[in-house]
Image 1 (tube, protein in one colour):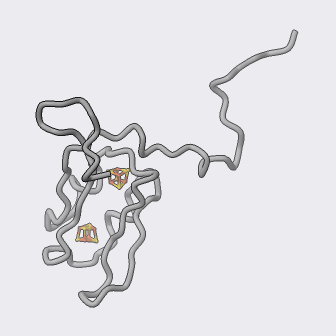
Image 2 (cartoon, protein in one colour):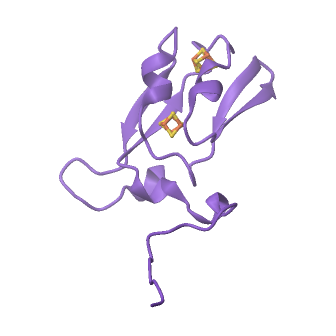
Length: 100
Ligand code: SF4
Ligand code: SF4
């Protein structure tokens, strides 16, 4: 009998699964507080933080297509440079288009 397991994800297909659509809050970084330690980029389970060169030194940049809003980066940042901001308006369940 042929199996029809639709929950199985094919190998090497993670880039097709944009986990950012799950997110209810997104991380935002204050470059003035960030010391460029790269810890957030190393810990992110989605691998969606890239360290980029800026005028202020090495700083994280988030790929919101894949960030699922787990808060790990914000919780582990040693200088609390990352805050989680809601994706929703205060009185609405509609996604906040300004932060998308
Ligand atoms: S963990 Fe915090 S201080 Fe380190 S690079 Fe990330 S945002 Fe900057
Ligand atoms: S919130 Fe989670 S998934 Fe998003 S960048 Fe931070 S650690 Fe990665």
